[in-house]
Length: 418
Image 1 (cartoon, one colour):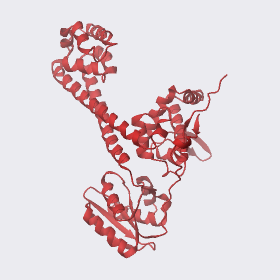
Image 2 (spheres, rainbow, N blue to C red; image 1 turned 120 degrees about the vertical axis):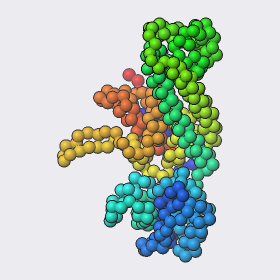
Image 3 (cartoon, one colour; image 1 turned 60 degrees about the vertical axis):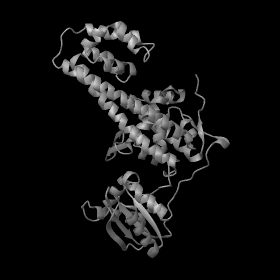
Image 4 (cartoon, rainbow, N blue to C red; image 1 turned 30 degrees about the vertical axis):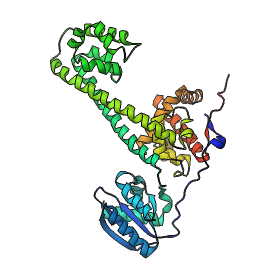
């Protein structure tokens, strides 16, 4: 498997793991963030509570609290359990007020919570645990560097793109389900291509088997030729072959003929929006200094590169490649009983979106000889397709971590011959 090679002067500067220094902190402020209000608990280095109240999610109230704590205790470290969405405003105000900021991952907080007495799940208890963990075990915190505008915009757009991808899948499944109900043979032809512009145009104009047959071959070919110049005639031939396989009209076909065009138009709209977002994501990704490092690795495209940039950044939040793999859910979980190891299985924890990005990039990288060789090696060891891809994804995460840490581009090693 290839390793990271030198990027020369073109690569970014070396980035070291950022450790949060709490030696000068006079107050640790834990925020259990919420939509309308947060619970804030501040404790001193000695463990004494300095503040413990709810406060509105508004800039004036947040700023007032931060300035009050700074005036009395000096440097304030503000720690949240959600750095994005509802935690964005408190962090922004805290930075503007001159406070230090950090992030305690939710899973870490839940494990730490087991060390504290009581089983109640309250905002006040969570806020105290966040603050006390920052005071007593600061190595569990993750740094929250001031995000540049590029990453902030990427995060918002990619999040919306993820929503659209889910909507596209939902509408596609609904459309295929309707076609299966009224004409299974037609679905077998159009279903696998349901998101193709030519198929959507055809279903938008002619939403039932009867309407398709009435339109005729010549009209359908003329309709979709611009969308599918190379397969228009073949696709229409396949459609009419499928239509000839069913002579009965299934109950509900007339109703489906009203719904199918609407769903086809809805799916087209969603896919068009994703195209526009993809163009903007590509622009933003190319403008980021880490873009060339990420995309130098085979299999990392616009969307996967953007997701990795958002969740991994320059990699400085992860002490090692193993930490990154665990965060992405790529580290296998070992199950054992006594002295007999029963085996390993994929982890169900971690950042699912980041895991999917690594998995998809590994699949795309199978065209690369070195990645294919590693995949084939795992298949030869008895792993099935998905397991082998997860192994490749984990290996690629290790390589990517080294690339980000050292500021180097992907440098493929020669594929062994013979």
